[in-house]
Image 1 (cartoon, helix red, strand yellow):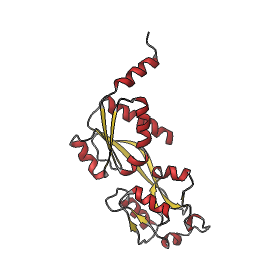
Image 2 (cartoon, one colour):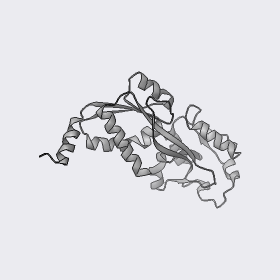
Image 3 (cartoon, one colour):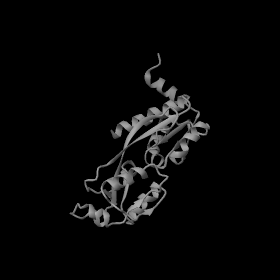
Image 4 (cartoon, helix red, strand yellow):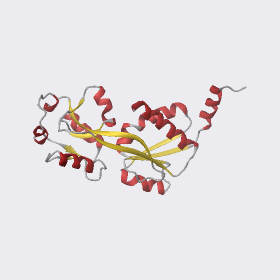
Length: 216
């Protein structure tokens, strides 16, 4: 009689197909490396391809069958399903003056330098709305890559509103800090979409859900 471990081993070795994933920069850089590592450990013969693309392009990649799974901040994907709640928080380098100030005046935020994503980034309207809500006028440096924005914050160029997930390692190492200025975190939902339901797609979605449960 075949026991459960043998069944699991047979199923793992049976998945030898290709899986193409297209994801927005934050998801591609901050979430999927951990998910793909877990997935590869279970299914070492599965061939994984990860493409980083703007959220605005992922729907077309799916519709043209150039990818099997799409991951985006936009709810416009085929068979779209929410998989995680993200937070956009105010970050500064641990060496930044605001990281050590005892004041919590909005004027501090007005008088320091900001780094913002460009207008094509899906987080930009949310950030602009938050700045307007708190009456903060900024003359920012614009950078079109979330990863580059984070590096600029680490270097001390300025402060920025970034995904909590994209900064988890720097927070753990004490390189970045979350500034507490009574500015409400910006909540946003992350989505997956697909045009197929292969065993490889199912395996990826299952591993993504398992990873998300670790952060809930």
